[in-house]
Image (cartoon, rainbow, N blue to C red):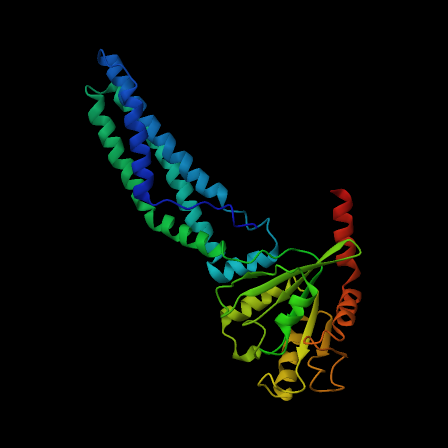
Length: 327
């Protein structure tokens, strides 16, 4: 997954402790016999500390992905969770600090060579370097919080994807369990009460993805807050076909009228092919919807899956086929 490789972002204190410890060891490795060797030892301390700090700052910046290069689905979710512009500004501050420390070290090395006591100059340099790194402590904390949030995002692939929607208890999770891999992945969005279920199945040697959406697409959109709506907007970028499951028996606890109103709201927002399927035919027979099934007895489930595969836009299937040929 895109964000899994982002390492823990250290605090300013941790960065300084690491760099100054390495600097002290660098000085111990020098044999101090005269003024020249003393100068070299102090220079080694300063340059080592600066190098460690610069490397660590640049490492933090490089490990965050470029949001201009990742799928729009993840861009949208990152915007919802942490704010992309704010993240870029914090990364820019860390990069500035790394560059500033290197520049300052070069300046102070020149000053040390002209000074009577290089140790005094090196201590002054350490003081200024410490101030620079401490000034980005807030940026480092922000980035570590962002890293922790982004790593929790579900691993959702770009490709033929079916989004399963409907009110709670209509059979969404049961359908995903029946048609997809036995080990369905459950991952939590930070704006849902339950985990998003992500399953996979293969047809004609092509891998399809099916996403269960508890807590996200199970109540009218007008009841959603801005963050939830943005999450739904992000989801539409991966959903190529929607399976909307209804429960005509209303044993799910929601009236048929409410279920159909939710369907209309989802159709307006997603604007992708949708298959409406009446579930629970084992207890209620209805002519509502395009098809019917029972996730309890499995009657009609395979036929529904066949129809969903047929509805998948040809461009999606062709793109995956072409990618596999190239690979």
